[in-house]
Structures are given as C-alpha cells and as structure tokens.
Image 1 (cartoon, helix red, strand yellow):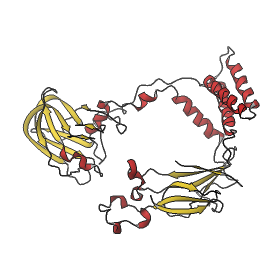
Image 2: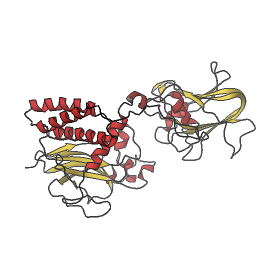
Image 3: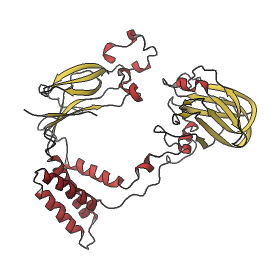
Image 4: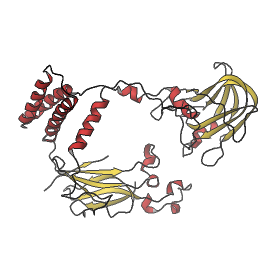
Amino acid sequence: MRRIHCFVTLGVWLAVSTGAAQEATTGSNSIPSQGQTAILTAGQLEADWLLENAVRGIPVARTGSVTAEEDAAGGCDGIMNGKWGFHTALEDDPWWQIDLKRSMRLDQIHVYNRCDHTAGRASRLAILVSGDGNEWEQVYQHDGTVFYGHTDGKPLVVDLAGTTARYVRIQLPGKTCLHLDEVEVYEVGFYTETNRSVESDLATQSSTCEYSTRSLPAHNSGPPILPTTKRVEGYATSVAIQRGLLLAGDLMQRGVDVGAEVKTLQKVAQQLRQPTDMPDHDRRQLYFQVRRAIRNMSLSNPLLDFDDLLFVKRHPSAYAHMSDQYYGWWSRPGGGLYILEDFRTDHPNLRCLTLDLPPGNILRPDISHDARKVLFSYAKFYPGLHGEKNKLDKGNIPEDAF
C-alpha cells in the first residue's frame, strides 16, 4: 500500500478518496497527469538554488526592520485605499505625527481611517499640535463615533480655526494600535476641493510592528526605500560542501549508502582548491553538482518513509488577520487539494483531488488511518460576500460559505 503524508500549508467539511480522484483534463489551467510535462524540472531546481545563493548574506534583521519614519510616511503619501498607511505596535497611547517644516495657521485636518472591522479603534483619537515638537496642546478629541473615509467618501474633518503650529500629532488613549489610511493637513487660505494638503515627508510615530512597511510620499519620485544590502558575489559552494558532508555523516549512521554523493562533494572541493581562474559558468556548474548531491541525500533519508505528499494550494484571503482569514466570506477562489506522487523521484506526478468542486477555498486536510480518505474544510466563493455588512444575520450568508 502506498503511504501518503499530509503537508498542511472554516468552512464545509468534505471528504474525498485519495485513490479515486479523476485525472485533470488538458488546458491552460489543467493539472498534468502521468506522462505529461514533468512537474519539477532541473531548471526549476537550479533557479531556486541560484535564488538562495543570491540572498545569502543579507541580514534577516535588516531586511525585516522598518524604521518609524519609513512606516509613518505611509500616512502622508497621498494614497487612500481604505487600508493602513502606517501601523504602530500594541502599546500605551500610540501616536503618529508630522513636521510641516514651518509654523503655519492651520485650517482643517482630514483623517482617513482604516476601513475594515478595526475602524472603531480610532473612535477616540485626539489631535495635538506643537510649535517645537516638545510642548503639545490638545485641540481635538473625537466623540467615539466610528468614521471611515475611502469607502464612503467621508473622512473625519476637524476645523482648527487658524491654530498656529508646526507639528501635528494624532494619538489614541490606552493600550491599543494606531493605524490610519491617510492624514491631510490644510493651511489657512489653501484648502479647496482640488488643492492638495501641505506636503511633508517628515513624519514619524511611536513604534513599529510586523505590519509596518516602507513608504514614500506620492510627490517624492523614485523607488521605495529599501534596506542597503551588499550582494554576495560568487557561489556558496564551499559552505554547501561542508553542510553536505555533515548530512552524509548523519545518513551513514542511519545505514544509508551515500558514497557516490560524498565522492561528488570531495571531487568538487578538490577542484575549488586549484589555483585557476575558473569561468563563471564552470563555477556555477560545480555549485549545481553540490546542490544536486545534497538533494539526493536528503531524499534518501529513511525518515521519509512515504511515497506521496498531500498539500493544499490556496489564494490568500481578501482579509488576512488572525482568525479572520479563516472565515469563509473572506475567501478568494483558486488552488485546491493535491497529491504529489513519487515526490522523491526525478519525475513526480501531481494530481488534483478537487477539480469538481465550485471555485472556493480549501484548507486543513486530515488523512484517515489507512490514507484512503481525506477530510478537509471548504468554503464556496461568493463574489462580494465579504462586503455584507450584517453577517450576524445568517440569512445573509450562504451555508457553504461559512
């Protein structure tokens, strides 16, 4: 009996047989069946190895780090889309502020909120102003009503009646997150329906988090701000050889014959020690030889004592945030439930088990004890359902969209 392993990347629970799924028909979106184009090619493997090689040496912390100024710029970049232009951490009294570059008499401030279920977080926001960035005066406190902006064309409009200031700060009370779509500040005598707000790229905020991003104001031409990194030239062949030999030692203790792969690693290591100016093409081929030997050893691990992999492909939901991404009404169509047969060979076969289901979203498969059936959750896709405002009334939500 073939052994199958579940690889997991709320809806209606369904079950299918792993052995009775029909083969896909041919077409632009079809799943190749046995004898068709190989699912995995040498070119794909080599492209992936080159990508790993290209990004090695880039510090993870640096690529993931976003400064307060970089994220805060999203609150004054001229982009209103109903999402968050910036996002602080969960903290006490979070704030966002902008330096207008000079003192001026302020006419109005327009605040565009994040327009999803978190819009209520901004319902108690306060606006403070300062002439020097140190001493602050509160000039507005919102009354607790929820406002939006992009979705209804009704941002929060605060009349400042000519208050003079250089710095404007928006702050929330208590322990919470501050995340707004856009903030527009208008100088006295300059506000019209077509006139832009005061332009400034000197914004900052109290903190950043995993939802923070790098932004640039819309009027500032040029590419987005990216971390400064130094590309590592050449190929990490020597490092791969060292790791490959460690893997070989572990597999030999498990009784696996890796003699051929060890000879490959040793041969390449010897070639690298030769004092020759080797062409880039030749050095690349040596790198591929090492990576291919390591792959072969990895797939010979006796712990991989099954034939097939079961996995889910799915499009990201329309809204991804904690548990909300699993609600069926946020789902987007695409993907399916698949079996990758003979995954340890050079010619694996991919089968889709859910071709007959209407477009929807699938996740969380569970295999029966004999690997003959799979239980999984499925939510049918209904265009526009995520926009239904009264989801508490289950009469508004089709049952197979839960």
